[in-house]
Each structure stands twice: as structure tokens, then as C-alpha cells.
Length: 292
Image (tube, rainbow, N blue to C red; front, side):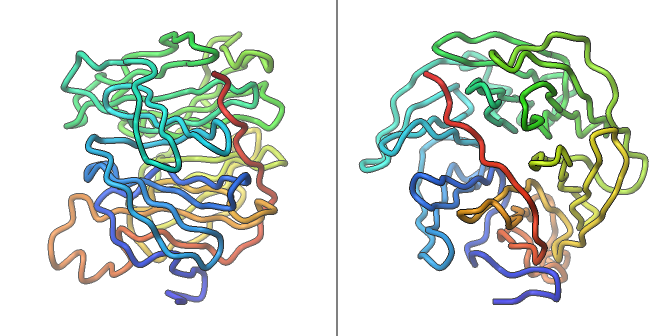
């Protein structure tokens, strides 16, 4: 179903806070989350039926392990999910003893390391952190972040990006391509002063960062030196995160949300909460499997 000249509705299931989309080349499946409802949604590319999995806890991101299992980033830490049965097994408890926080943005570094962000359930100032996981080891990388977002990496694994949506600052930091650990101090990559908030991001094969701009109905593309080089309108006011989808990673899907909207706002924004497939061509890359 076409929603506008620039987007196609990918699924008609509405999420209050649609987030964490991705594509699994092992199974040809697109996934995304409804964080606040504790739901994982999956759909075979391109015309499969949307399957909804009730998780029983808030989760926001997924990493592929293999054709049998996935790793879920949740409010209590990392769980391994059996694809066939849906059974969740706790792998690493992270901030599980802090009921004030939940999982938010996350992505797998080209080394197989998983960078994962937390935030306060009520967006409490400075409550969030960014964590690193690889081969069973967990480290805290950054703390004092209000809304962790835009975790993404250059294709060669030498640069990591992350944002605090509350400050509207997107940082970059050099990383070891073999481990995904920072090897420099962070510096400002882009400070957004226009309307809208820096939300989720992905980086394409050319090093261009694609960012969902919450509240401004757009996905913005930034060059490796932080310049805005393209703006793609999204027919929903609150896009939350983009993902490269399709077997060639050449399409861009974006999740959206109706969180915080009143009845009249939702009526005026009929796509809010539904994933949208933007009608543009991209040169994307898929996240690597996480290294257990």
C-alpha cells in the first residue's frame, strides 16, 4: 500500500514505539520491536505475513547469532532467543537491578561486538549508558547519557557513532576494527539545532550516516565529515530508526511511533506507529552476527 509519493507501508500493525529494525540475510526476514508493549515483529521479505511475538518484557534491539538463534537486548540484559520455539534464555544480566532503566538503541560492530544503550524509562537525565559485549565479556563504555541513540559504525569498523537525543548531539569515536572497543576520546560529529531529534541511525557502504529525525518527519543523510547531504521526507512525524533491508541491502525501511500523541494528533498522522519502506535506493550493509 502506497502512503505517499515517497514511501510504502510495510506492515499495517501499529506500534506505540516502533524501534530497532533490521534485516536477517540468513532467513530473508525483517524484524522490528514495539518496545513499550514488549513485542517482537517479523515479516518475510517482501510480502510475508507479519508475525507478532509477545516477549513478556521490554526489548528494543536484536542481533543475529545463527539460523537457529538470536540475541535480544532487553530491559534486563541480553537474552538468547530460540527462533523455532521463541524461548528466551538469559545470557548476561545488564542493569537488571535498576528498575528505572530499560534497553534502547543497539547495533553490532563489524567485529561482532554488540554496542547497547540504556535510558531511563521516564527519560531521566543522565540515566543511560552504552555497553559493549563480545564473546561473553561485558564492559560499560559511556555513562551519563539521557536518551542513547544512533549507535552505528563505519563499514571498516574504525569509527563508531552514538547520540544523546536529549542534547541533540551525535558523537564519533575511533574504534579498534578487531574488537569494537574505543581507541580515542569522543568528539562531536553533528549538533542538530533545527527542529526534530536525532534518533536511530545506520551507516551505508560509502560511510554515509542515515538518521531518523524524531518529530520532524524525515531521514537525514550525513557525509563522513558530518555534513547534511540529503533529506528524505517520511510520511509520519515520529520516525525512530532506519534499516537497510532486502537481499541486496538496497532499500531503506524506517520504524515510526505514536508515543505521546493525543487522539487528534494520531488522526492527523495515520502512519504513526507503522514501518515504512522509503522509495529511495541505497547502498547498505548488513550487521554482522554477534560473537558469543
